[in-house]
Image (cartoon, rainbow, N blue to C red):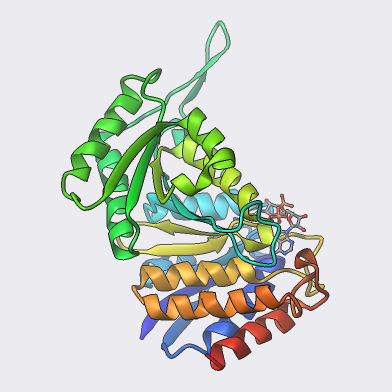
Length: 329
Ligand code: NAI
Ligand code: MG
């Protein structure tokens, strides 16, 4: 039995969450869901976007499924990352059939450091203009590298590429690269590589098959994740994981998409794939693959899919079809 916090949030967050929970019911796993509030609608009623109750529920759970928030997204998701010290942001770049992916056989993962780098928010106005501080610590570099290696080991991946700009940022990225190679000594079976971030951005387009697991700092990871999303299709398809020492929080990359909200036209795939990442995190690998395969069948057939995938089915119709595939596996 897994204790799972469920935060549907706003707009299509609620709809893709309902669809995903419907699909998960077909798996032979017991989840005890604890529903929790956060987002714009909750803030309208109470003045608070992320109540302490919700943080407590997530802390007491093994994992959290999060739909999307609207305008309060930063207050909800950024706060949750800090409160729970979710230091890993994990984004798969995987091409699925029946989508607008630019390549057919992509399958790599970006592991982005989520707590420091240029995003610590230490900016300052100066006489000449402004400065921002970029902080790289041994501790954060070590734990993000170790996470990447452990993740690779658990999920059967073979190669890790550290992405940095150590030729220019000699001290900060020099440290990141050095720590990466120190951690690598504990994983002699792993193939190692390191690349400059600018070249990596180019190789995403020209030779993306060279990547397996990428580990990188906060800003570079943010940019490369979105480039990766662009390689494999629209927002309706891209999941993400935020992982800390004690919890994991799994969410689609998309927001509350007000234009789709209430119409049943949102693609549930990104949320379903976020649940798949949760299953991997819980080491339910067989169930994760079953869920993924069921979705792939539906995408491949391309018949009962939402409008962004070229179909005319609703969110729940597509979810029911994924569930049928799961039940007939
Ligand atoms: P968005 O991701 O909600 O939508 C961007 C575009 O992608 C829209 O054209 C939308 O129709 C399409 N889209 C997104 N998800 C889709 C799905 N599942 N199926 C089909 N089409 C989909 O981003 P936008 O419009 O910039 O922001 C809308 C609201 O969401 C804002 O209030 C923003 O603050 C919030 N937001 C929340 C996030 C979070 O909770 N993590 C992340 C991004 C935005
Ligand atoms: Mg981003």
